[in-house]
Length: 181
Image (cartoon, rainbow, N blue to C red; front, side, top):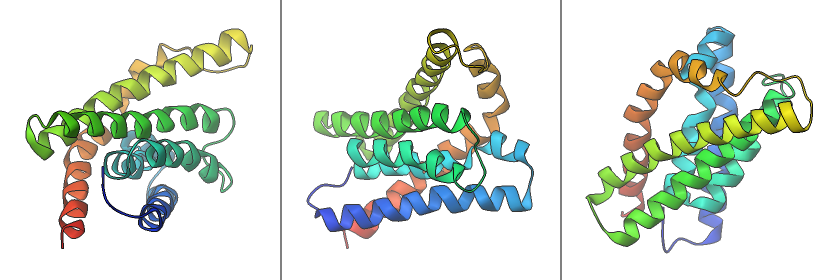
């Protein structure tokens, strides 16, 4: 999470991350298939970066808005855009919160803090995803997949998870390096 930067910088960086969360999935759908998008989860990358680099507020907002704005261009459709809004909002919020707490504790260094924030927020986001499915299915009586489908989406999404574990820390570290110039 960046510190000491003004709100204009955060707003600009957040806007760029939201734009990346819209453009990158479009590229996947142009050059690939819908299944590739589900497998590699291209919307997730900029949300994790936003949470870890910009903090809980920006991470949560960018995470929540990314699938909703993408749905204006056709993917994901209702109710999945709403389900994903809560899931990605949780990714952004929890990655920012954990990064903040770990940096405050000053344990393990920056790289370890990034990885812990990323992995724990991945788990927290999946839990939120399952809870939203449960609420929409049981309480609101909407036609949605069962919460148990979270496991199948995790297994199907392993290539994307691996790619996120490789690319997100590198992107965040590069942003920190440019910040310190």
